[in-house]
Amino acid sequence: MATSLFISDLHLDPERPEGIRLFDDFIRNKAVDAEQIFILGDLFEYWLGDDASEHCGYQIIIECLANLVCKKTRVYFMHGNRDFLVGKDFASSIGGCLLPDPSKFRLGEIDVLLMHGDSLCTDDVAHQKFREQTRSREWQQNILSKSIAEREEFARQLRMNSKKGNTDKPESIMDVNHAAVGSVMKDNHVSLLIHGHTHRTAIHNFQLMGKTAHRIVLGDWYKEGNYLIHDQQGFRLLSYPGDSVLATLDNAQLS
Image (cartoon, rainbow, N blue to C red):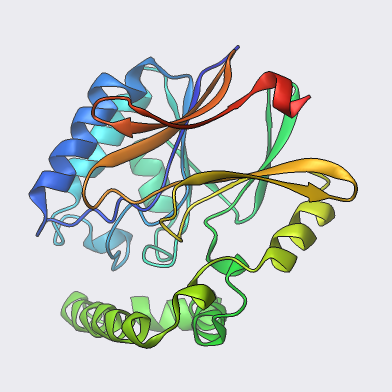
C-alpha cells in the first residue's frame, strides 16, 4: 500500500525562518519516503501571486518541493484562506498538482474527502463572505493586476484585519459547523473527511446516516510540526519532529 502524508496550515513566512527550516527538514527526512503528500492549504502565510514568489522569499520552499517531486514523491496542493492566489505556474514550478476544494480521493480501499476546512465554518458569516469574494476570478485578476508592492500592502492589511477580527470572535464560530460537515460528506458519499484550517488537531468519530463516520483535523505548525500518515496500519496523527502519536484511526475502525 502506498504511504500518504497530509499537512496543512504551516503558514510559512520568511519572517519566521525556523518554520521554513522545520518544513525543509520534514520534506528531506519524512516526505521523501512517501508515495504522495497532500498539502491542504495555508502552506504560506500569504501568497501575492506566482510572479512574486522570489520577491517574497519563497523560492527556497519551491525548490524544496521540486526536489521532492524529483525523488518520485507526488505533491498535491489545495488552496487555503491565506494562499488562494497560488496558481498553475506554482504547480508547474514544483511539478505538483492543484486540487479543487473539496476533492474526493481514493486511498487503498476507502474514499476520502479532502478540504482546507474554512468553508465548513459556516457560523463565521464574515469569513464566508470574504471567502466568496476572494474565490471570484474577477476579484483575483484585479488583485494580480496591481504591482507587487501594492499587493504586499494589501496582504499586510488583510493579516492585520484577520488578527483583529479573530480576537473579537467567539471561539465557537471559528470551528466547523457539524451540519455543514455532515452535508458535504453525504453529498460526496464518504465516511471520512480530512481537513485543516481550525488548527484543532484531533480525530473525531460520530454518527452519520446510521453509520460511524470520521473527521481528521490537521494542526498548525506555529510551535511544532504535525502530520497525518496513511499506510497499511491505517491513519496516525503524529508530531514533528519526534513522531509522537497524537491520535489514531486503524483499519478495523474504517471497515
